[in-house]
Every structure is written in structure tokens, then in C-alpha cells.
Amino acid sequence: MLKLLFICDAGVRRSPTAAELFADRAETRFRGVRAAAIGAANLVPELADHQLEGDDFRWADRIFCMDKRNEVHIRQLFGKLSYEKKIAVLGVPDRFVKNDPRLKAAFESLAEYIVGDKDPDYMPLIFR
Image: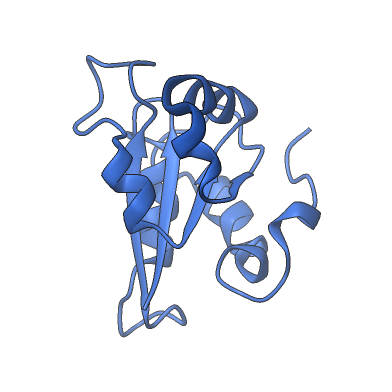
């Protein structure tokens, strides 16, 4: 089973949208995928249900940050541990509500990079 971890500021809008889209459900094409959403530790602590911890890194096979700020914060906070696995940046700005159709369409368009065989380093920029 492929385990995906999506990280945004608080784990409330962008990352839950992605996690729900890619979750293992019979009615989707993403069978055999487990997905979790989480907020980057200490960025928006009053909003996050669960903030990022080292165990989250160890659980995930693939880690995706919504924006570069999330990645930088995680690298500063977790140091060496954050380099144990590759972190891909999706480039999704924090201007969407949860389950926004445009946000879902963007994640769908990146599916081959997120759950497929294409290298996330070569993902196209969806938002400018």
C-alpha cells in the first residue's frame, strides 16, 4: 500500500482536499493508496488538529508540501530527519477553501506525479 502525506499550513484546507481525493476508496482509481493530511508544525497551531511529528515522516512513502514555505519550515524544524525522505513541493497557494473544484482539478492533473511513476521533481507548475 502506497502511503502519501500531504502538508499545508494548518492541515485544514489544501492538504485534506488532496488526502481525501487520493484516499483508498472503491469508487476511485486510487485503490491501494493511503493518504493523510497534516499541518506544518507551529505554522498555525490554533487551527491544526494534529501537527507534524517525526513519526509522520517515518509513516509516509511520499511526502508533498503545498508550498515552498511549508518545506522550508519543516526542514528548519526537523533538520536531519526531514532529509531522510524526499519532500516534493506542489506549488499550491493558500487561497482555496477545502474541496474547491479548481483545487481538486489541479491535484487530479498531478496524479501521475503523486501516485504514478513520474518523478515529482518534474511536475508542471499548475498555479502561477
